[in-house]
Image (cartoon, rainbow, N blue to C red; front, side, top):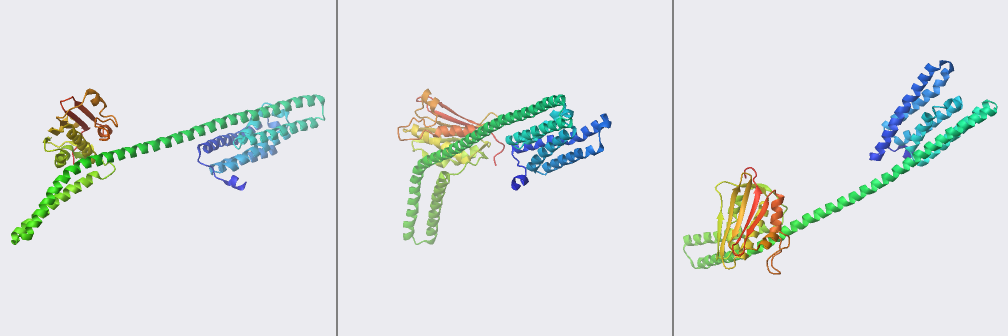
Length: 443
């Protein structure tokens, strides 16, 4: 019990609402009692005894003390003292002045203790109502006894007591039903809040799972593109290793120091080229979170020339068309490399007998930069073009391709505020255009 009384007021919305209601009730009653005393003394000075002011002053002081306790956070103490003080005041008024003198003011005397009790619970309301009925009956009995059981006084007092007691019970019943209704609404609202919280958590998990799946798909596309690159790089790697072995064999037979020095330089040069190729491949295939930045799209495409050459057979001519000015965009450079290499690998498959692949960068209007990948391959039908950006749709044979390359590329472009366009016709090749918003200066 002591812990309940001394517990500080909580910060929950319901606790703050109850505290505000109690504060309003305490302020009202703290002002009402002294004002009522002054007004009654002014209107009926002949009926008032100065000693009668002492209980009113005591009640007022106790009410303001409850207000101070409430301000310090002790809601339970203030809410417990106020109904007790109010009931004591009602009992003194009714027993001192009689039941008949309370006619017309019974509402202001009966409601405050019931409202204060309501803040503590419904059972406290009924307890307070029972005490009020007892006070009313006791006051009525005192009035009848003071008039020596006069039959006319008996009848009028019984009627007044019955009316007052009925009003007290009706007020308690009304407050109890209102509290029950509010409790029901509160429980329903709390349950809805819990359901919304569960739905929010579920949606958050789904969004996180979707983002995780997207990153995994991007990595899968990187691995697929890395496989294409690896096959081309392995061919060049063999040539580089052949150079190293050739220099080593000649070095064993060479006696001239200057020739040996030149051979060592050749070995070092071939090894550096091989290390650069392998490092480029490892960096590209690494799974990392996207890091968008402002960079020159033309410069990135220019750096892809060696990798593009590895993706195509000798029967395919690779052209790179770059503008004279920088074309800055805000994007993840590695993701853009993935998109362009994926488009190049699709073009290589579309030209098994050879052809021309063109990768160009150009300004599109004043606020866009477009990167166009064109091939002279077999092309696609109108139906295939319409579905090319759908996830898992592919025109490749079963077991080849994931059907995610263009879908991911389109999604990445849209996330960046751009778009992906496809133009194709059977036998006339395919052109895929990636348009991205222009952003400041690269650097």
